[in-house]
Length: 170
Image 1 (cartoon, rainbow, N blue to C red):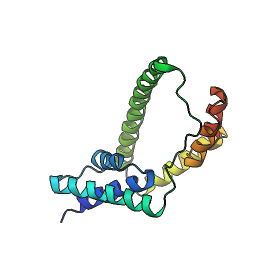
Image 2 (spheres, one colour; image 1 turned 120 degrees about the horizontal axis):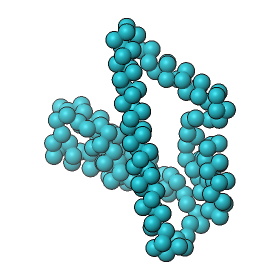
Image 3 (cartoon, rainbow, N blue to C red; image 1 turned 90 degrees about the vertical axis):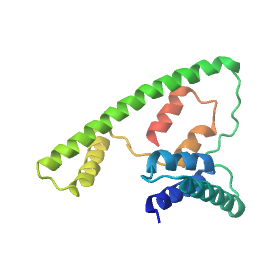
Image 4 (tube, rainbow, N blue to C red; image 1 turned 135 degrees about the horizontal axis):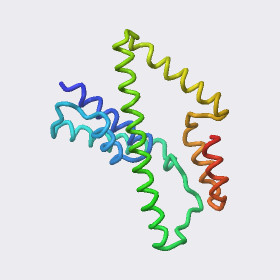
């Protein structure tokens, strides 16, 4: 009866199956999909969809997590927690910047709509902008997937600069 609830359940199941993280799938569906008429039945449906999809994947495709961190050791004691705190604060500032860029892009799209540019042109304009940015910077601007992350995590003893350059080239 509720197509938004079914979409949220499918999203929760997809994240749960793809990342072996049913709780993350439920939160993803609640945060990103946000069904308008959300009720307890829809939440129950999302819970069941996420749990069942993760169980099916683990039963028939037991491969482990999508990102493997081999050889990781927590060696700095609680002192490292300070750096995680600073990383969280930095991530908050970057997130605020992304939010402002998103708001600017949304207002630009609204302005282009007022000027008579058809809405079907906007994805093409975004693709052209992505290509131009990659040509100007001479590097890839799109993420390559878990292969790149696993390659970076393969050797945890690499210096930070080399790891950052590997991630940016992926």
